Image (cartoon, rainbow, N blue to C red; front, side, top):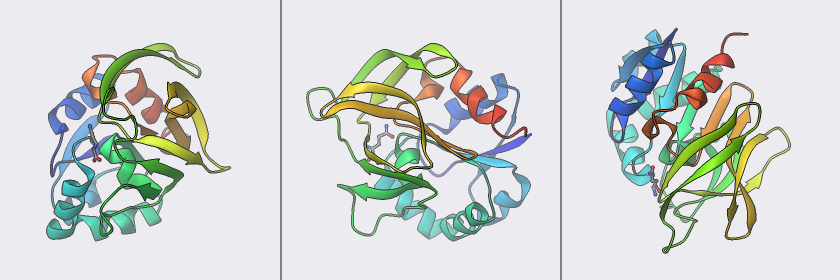
Length: 193
Ligand code: GLN
């Protein structure tokens, strides 16, 4: 299975490695044409405002929006989660939102003291997974079609950190950084039926 990794900014190399180990064939996506070769796409962590500008200037943003509308499955981690969310709080007014996952996220929502942290997550159907959070978004609202697969104790109580809607998966943490490939496998397993 060819899985694109949006390669404009952020931890592209780590996602490529994770996808390879999880049994997929990673393909870097830098130009609109690159999307025609992929069966799914990963939107990595980085800075959603910068990614947003690069999506615009490269032309990949409009092409990706069209592919998502045709059903291309997407996996967004951290900044990638922000890009896939229906609604973004605390973003730049002009930042891009593809809106394919019906959640509201607050950028950098875990607050100053705990902007970066690690913990063991109880993931639905998978068991404990080590999760690395770096200036992560907080999911403030989850729509009725969104499945919450893991939560952490956030500023306002249990906060979803791993969600699925149809073929799309979003995480506010960085599964590509922990060496554990089960979250990538979870995304890939959703593509095989
Ligand atoms: N805080 C970043 C943003 O708003 C996301 C951080 C990350 O991807 N590690 O885009």
